[in-house]
Length: 178
Length: 149
Image 1 (tube, rainbow over the protein chains, first blue to last red):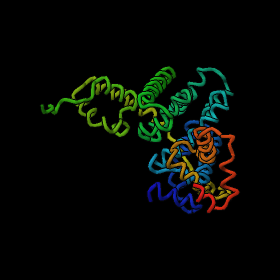
Image 2 (tube, rainbow over the protein chains, first blue to last red):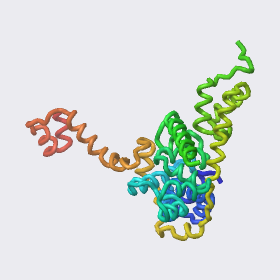
Image 3 (cartoon, each protein chain N blue to C red):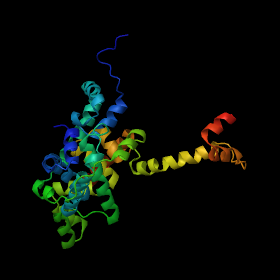
């Protein structure tokens, strides 16, 4: 079933069609929100809120304007950005990193205790919200540059600039921590 | 002139930008530039070295994998009892005439007759104090009006 037909059914209140939509898109939205917010409970709340909005506003979706995946990511992105701005501080990292910070708060100890995956997580989490969003949508969510530019409301050139800086900063952070 | 098969419309600087922005995997590159970039890579050791560097970073980024648990039942079960809002006729009409202005559609449509009346009123003849013609039309029979003309 194509996006337009699926959303048409959802807009008529068809819960089975909505279950298909959730099955198809919720894992990607969950991964996206988790990569942006890092915290599992917050990511789950964002997915829940995104899907509730989709359920209530399914009639607003226009398949001629955007792919369903793009529309869903745009809603989730807006909700994530709202949360990140409310937090007004850098998001906490993985549980391993949090426990390391509370145990012995020295940079040397921190670097020793983090395995490679944690270091990557830390490097990505240290990016600004714009750089992280650009990287996550393009690299991990595998959306096209046009879709990502549309979701973020930037030009493709601006998106590429964000991506170059994001990758460069991750590389520098990882090199410094190894 | 026929283009040489080894020529590519993609400049080396643009090729570097793509590798630095999107990494080493061709499937992540912009679709319309993918073929040209592969062609340039085949000719340029410098670009191949840059791709190798990008590939190492990709390998590290790939370590950040997440375990996502499917929660379809919970998500569907927690939907509000309220059913989706269907677009009403004003939304649909406004969607045709004012695409992209969803929040303003109903207000604009509601205000349109008022605005039209206002403009019509301004553009008409100035009001007159002479009511004799109106009184004649109201207080006389149709036959009298017609014969008078």
